[in-house]
Length: 270
Image (cartoon, rainbow, N blue to C red):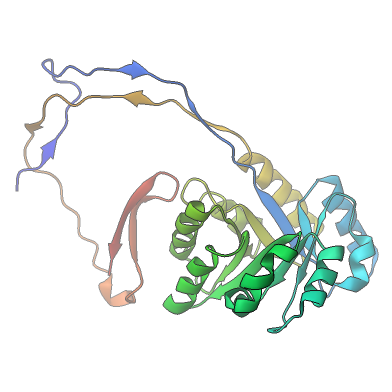
């Protein structure tokens, strides 16, 4: 098979080039900390102080530790009940900035009737472990302002699928991560990255590292774009081939991404 290629160095190939303004991308990222279950101590007080000082976005806390949350940091409440009343959710909205409801509540007719009564950000959370739960996560982007996802596997391909759909509905996506190293990867998925990450029971070392990661992710991307017109193509001979045979090691929902997470690629399924 003779491949077809475009050569920009041929003398008879003229390109119409017009300059355009650089493409600026606002890449503000957020970090939430799950501080539920931490006992009051000097270490906990230092965590709250650092969170406020470095202006992290929010914390998941219970009612008994609400008073410890620094001013300007969002307070997040996760509701586990499958049948909350309007009064209960309104009570949570009075004390918290973000209320996380179970996905079964979000799918119910009760939520469709009452969602406009809650003057707070309503979120949902999905633990993605199989294709069905991945479909559920995508479905949730149609109904909530903010979606929290957690993945069983280390691959970030399911996150790409959720992010692609969330962008069409204006839904923010947060992912639960183990540490600042994984957070850096999550912020670069599909170039835009997740809107935020959630860290469970952090320490001061992680807080410092996450602050550096967020500052790096927040830098504007200046990508100059130019318009090109292809006027000619020509055959340049045989192309190189490569074979990667890993199909016996992969499941039906796995594959290899040829390219990069930040700039795009081709997904070769098993």
